[in-house]
Length: 141
Image 1 (cartoon, rainbow, N blue to C red):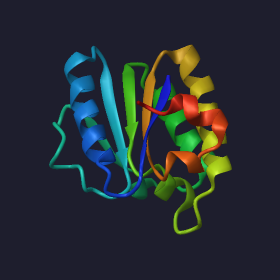
Image 2 (image 1 turned 90 degrees about the horizontal axis):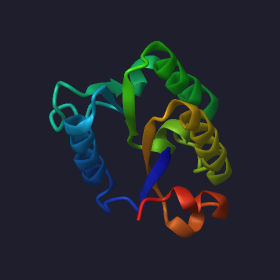
Image 3 (image 1 turned 90 degrees about the vertical axis):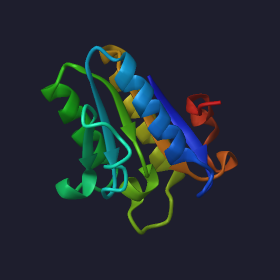
Image 4 (image 1 turned 45 degrees about the vertical axis):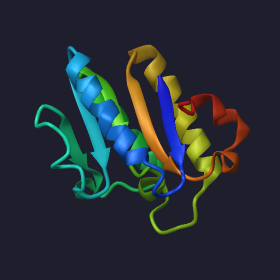
């Protein structure tokens, strides 16, 4: 299952994500992974959570990011939850936000997670109205 925490910059998305990561780590019988751009969360999360700085792997763009996540899941069947902060920064870098690329990325992840029964939660910095209608069902309320 894929879901998105959507809001403008400074709206508390990362704080919400951290709370959800901590809750998942408490309830999970497997591994919880948190992917971020940089190392801002390293002091906010327990060492039990696998924290990945995506910059260390040179990942940018939807295809590479999807492949990275699929590789994580292929290499570790015990992952129950993946949390991803700064989704647009990873997908688009310094380029303008590409909402259609995000929508396809979310749909592809959703297809992947249905067969694996895993949760993927993304933070997305934008206004909900900017997102294509077809991904509104993935937005956390």
